Length: 126
Image (cartoon, rainbow, N blue to C red; front, side, top):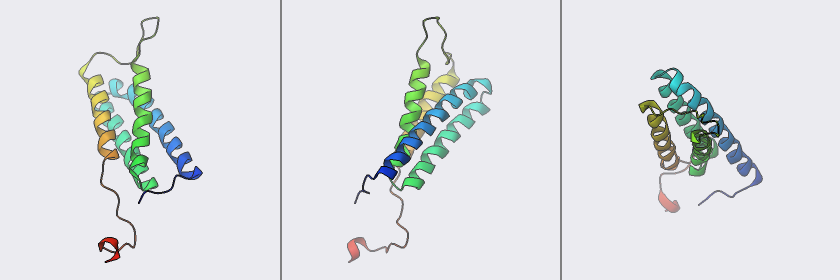
């Protein structure tokens, strides 16, 4: 049964999405600066945030909200400016960050549901 969508839960998802956007911006700066350690650090930060959101909310949407925030921030950073500047280069590290981050977010969003505490192993109480 799905958890009811209360104001507190919506606020949690919004905070997770903002944190995901911040991790995306920070990861975009770090991944190229300290390659390959920065790439690893950026992807681990995203994985930790997505899994933490999953555990904190107890729902899959808690794991998807940071991934959605990360994706929006990273896609906005890939757009070039009128001056011709952009944050991501055309190297292998940038593509690994983009594709790896999307894979991490999808994996965390599709993890099996967490077991309920103090729940019996019997299905439907039979």
